Image (tube, rainbow, N blue to C red; front, side):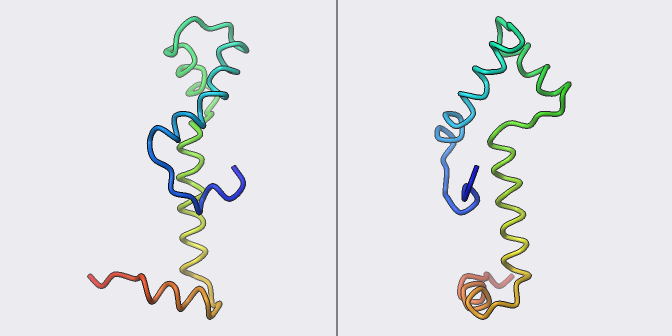
Length: 83
């Protein structure tokens, strides 16, 4: 997950990142279908890898825009959209 917040993933890349975890859960719960694994993840409050990455992106953007650093301010003002 290190530095995943600054990379641009497409949906197939996010799916492939979540695949190893899904396989581990299949083996751990001795599940035969994806529905069982999904229910186990929901029961144990275990989010998908894509959700974890989106949380990291939101946190990064929030901290970046709140920063008083001159470089962050310059980049923010350059790419900030006007409503």
